[in-house]
Length: 262
Image (tube, rainbow, N blue to C red; front, side):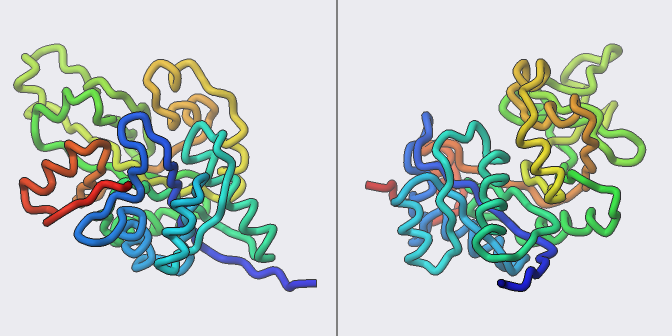
């Protein structure tokens, strides 16, 4: 019988092959490396155990080629959080190890800064924190009105009050072009940390009305009574949602070249 050992932090990178907007996205090459490799390497600079969770053999093969840890998961998961929950269970079953805290790391952020992960780890110095995430202050007025950019309001203890694609807060007394000067606005940086038990529970929760309305799964957790600790970062995230995003990054010198998967 194997002796059980406990691991403090586990990073999981959910990586689906099928995507409506960008099929095969994890395998696009950016400056000579696939996106999934770049994410895994950057995350591995912050933590010892980082696992790629995928439902596709091509991604599994690519991960094995560059030496990444990879676990095959069900293709039926509706979200990355659900894929993370299965991944932890599979890892614990096969390794004999148990995990304390799980990080859901976005697989479409090839320029992920390891310092973001390290900062999120600090939330778990408080044993009462069950879910944590990062937020960043918005400094451009037009970003407040970007419906693809989730916003968040927080309480005095930096716990989330609400997430929305709409501008929050709404300022009644000023024109919209002045809102940035009269309130503090935060955007959500989509990396999460969960205690192992909390991840197990929330992955089994049914969708809620607010989640369905906004298409933001974190609202399910809030509606179900799970506080979300928010840590403010000054490091932005650069996600790749489409080929156009790659073209913009090349235009602005963020990357030199990219190659679409076959």
